[in-house]
Structure formats: C-alpha cells, structure tokens
Image (cartoon, rainbow over all chains, first blue to last red; front, side):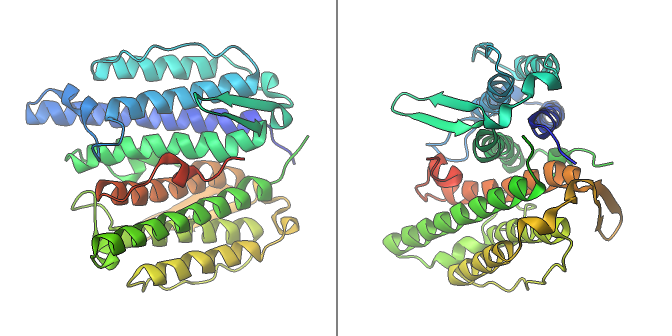
Length: 169
Length: 169
C-alpha cells in the first residue's frame, strides 16, 4: 500500500486549523463570560522575547498555506498580517482552509522528491518535498498551535488536549 | 515514488527526541549559570491544571515509544515514570531513542492499514496505522515537546526555534 504527499499533509493541516478555529471560539466565549475584550489575547506572550499570540496564529496559517502551495507547486497566495481581533483571525484561518481545499491530490504527485527552497533573510534552506513536510512543516505547524493553546491555557481559558487533537472517531 | 510508515515516523521521532535532549542540556547549563538546582524545572507548569515539565518529557518519550511499538507490531516496553532530575530525563530519552533504533524498516511493512487500538480508562480509540501516526502520534509528540520548550522559555532559558527544529542541512 502506498500513500501520497497529499494524504500526509492536507488532512493533517486541515484538521489542525479546524481544531485551532474551535479553540479560538472558546477563547472568545471565555472573554465574554469574564467580560473582557478578547482582543487583549492577541498581544499575550509566554516570554518577553517570544512572539505574541496573533503571530502564532498567523505563522500556523502561513506554514500550512506555504506547505500546500510548495508541495502542489502552485503560487503561494499572500495573506496580509493585519488581524486586530478574533473575528479577523477566524477569517484568516478559514481563508487558509479554503486554499487547502482548492488543491487536488493530483497536484501533489511527485512532491516527495521535488526540491523545495525556503529563502530567509540570511540563508536559504533546501529540502526534498518529503523532508520539508516531515522535518519543517509539521513540527512548525504543531509548535505554533501548541504555543497558542498554551498561551490561552496559561490565561485561564478552559481547554483540554481533545480540543487540540480534535475528535478521533 | 512511495515511502513507508517507517520513513514517516522513525526519523521524525528520533529527530524530535534528539532535539529535546539538546534543549534539556541547555536548561541544565542555564541553571548552573544562575546557580539554582535544575531539578526545580521538573515540577514547573504553565497553568495549575496543566501537567508539569517532567510529565511533558515522559509523555513525549512514551508517545514515540508507543508509536514505534504499535506500528512495528512488537511489544511496547514499559519505562517507569520515576525521573527526579535532568540526568534521569536524559536516560529516559536515550532509552527511548535506543528502542526506536532497534527496529527495522521491514517491521513497519503494512503498518499504514493495520488496526491500532488505544485503551484509555473510559474509552478505546481505534485507528488505522496511518491515521494513528498522522492524527494522534505526531500532533501529540510535537505538542509535549513544544510545551516543554515553552516552559523553559517562560522561565528564562535561552532557546530559539532552531533548538526545537534541529539543524536543517
């Protein structure tokens, strides 16, 4: 039995973002119940030199979007980082989900061996498609969602591991 | 091109635990520089009802060990949860890495379609091998490593994303 890069990426990324969206809804409900503006969460950090909550969500989305675009070999759409509240973040997540949904399994054929270049200000990372997915995309994607979860948990929002993992059956 | 469940699991789990081990070394060095007992980290939590640091490491290890055992269809060795300091945690991680190393790619043949049952006190989760890996093992594994990283970062240990991701090239 064989499986494709599509099967190894799109369902996991879709599932992670869908769970993240539900986690954000719980943060909004918590803020409403406690009568504070949920937007204060956006600038919360776990350490002064860690990125704030809003960036964790933006990077989780862009990690998924960039992975899907690079592995399907299509243009990576630009999503501006201008979210100011949870409604904006929900739009960002759903725009990302729509992009993942727009791609077909056929577009990922041969992606495992394709050369992927990631350009950063000071260096360029070079991967095969499979290494990019397993050693860069998935660890990064789950990292940013986990940090967002941790930020909300450490600020009192009632969440459990099942919110992060989503329904299993 | 096809790839196997072995390729999708063992390198990622090995890499994650190796990076975690190096992160723990940095925590020990930080405690030494600041002249406090590094063992105090073991009971640190991000929220009163989240698991402490020591549990995050134990669960990261057991997620990797259980995944390898179940996907290779061999007995899951029991590792006792009795670590009292960072030296013990390093042993735990290396014992887990040794177990991953003991398995061969051939043992994972057909693992993607094998039925995996996870028994919990109140329910049993049923997966195919591939769903177990992608929707349970990897998100959980990266979650516990990310939370451990976040705990150390929020307590002043100097770490960056490259410590979590490891060297790319």
